Image 1 (cartoon, rainbow, N blue to C red):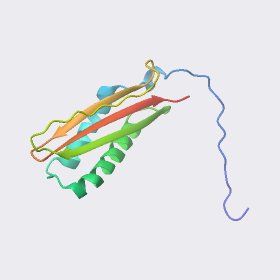
Image 2: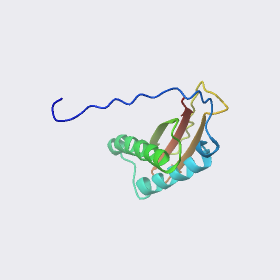
Image 3: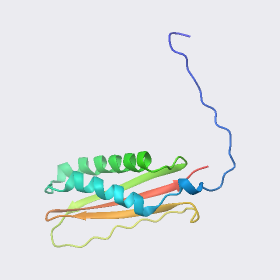
Image 4: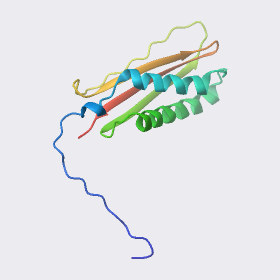
Length: 129
């Protein structure tokens, strides 16, 4: 080979149909991590349409990184959906529908609101075998 060896990891099936007790997704823990990220990113921000596009991607990435690094969830796929909008005397409702295993999969949701903007974050945790 030319300088670098290529390694291929082969994983054998474990036939586990659920997480171990110390690997369960707890929505309260994920919500606390997302709240920290939202406060750090949006606390003193004012709504700007162009910046909101970047903020939503950055917040989703930081929340996903925080959940995967701080919680012990090796067999979960973490999906983060972030919605940012302007507060202008209107109402909004964010909803999602999924087909999943109610025994192992779960979600957490949190919101942040200041004078000019709102942000809603939904964290989905899907157990994979």
